[in-house]
Image (cartoon, rainbow, N blue to C red):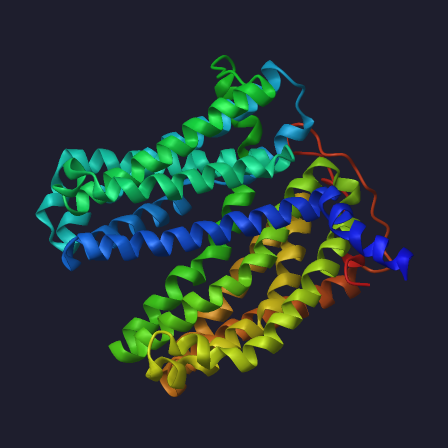
Length: 450
């Protein structure tokens, strides 16, 4: 009995000694804390600003988020795969500098492109201000740079810094809402405050990076480094956009088909359900960083990741069957009555979603970008198509069945891939520094689920 107690006491310590488990846990904490502080941020904004200004600011932040998604160009993922092969010092700093430069430049450009038509689309004259345009463009560029820095800390096995900077950004935004000079600017002031908060987080991250790895910006050979990373950037970009498209498009489809009341029910289930996907997304992010450091061990690490996440997801799914209605009733009784089944459908897909996330991560580590892109875009098209058809017939539940159809199709593709690849011999090669190589890193994903 005493030996068993000692073993149980050591379990948390052993868990956090494992780099994958530790990184996954810290990413979960960072994401959850950011979501909680973000909720508090918009509650505070709603109390101190007119509803029209809050609505305009919400649109602005949404535009900034989408512009970041489209302009990141795979840099935040490419840097994870590139820096483990680089020597410390100028070579390492060059890769980081190139990734930050590309992410920031195209983020600013994307922000400016979005700014030009935005005031005429939502008809808010204040958004025509050059000050707002600068804040929006800088916000996109800094958000991109922050994504690159976050992933660098994960691959450096210092995910606690990511937790620190994410928390700093979410915290700094709160008092800026109350700053008189920004409050007087309304929605423009909210966007400026948001951009300043991201700047504070990025600045802190860069200072810590200079201290931790003696990072210094490098300009010489910058274009050559970007050229060497271009294929890795493009491959990860196509995967990232394809995986994110349904998150932004499905709500638009719902809003275009059903009533505004039903749309509100959908959003409540959609937002609550998103929290249940944090675990698998965090494990996938940590696995990508750890797998990029040691590609030959990627499959073994993937098995470890699934052993951690699968039991938790099964437990969460079972619990939600009983808790879905009470959770949604917090929005109002009608929400619990009309959206509970949709929430259960969404959370039921967390298990196949975890399998698919890990599978995509293995393909990315192996630099099988074409297959991974086809996989995520195929799932996206299935989800959007099935959702569009079923929402017309069964309402918001159609979105849940569309999500389930896409995830199950993904698992089926994995089974086919495993059968097709089983029996073949695959050599495990180390990745070349330029992200090339004849076979990439080892192609062993067919063994993942055995």
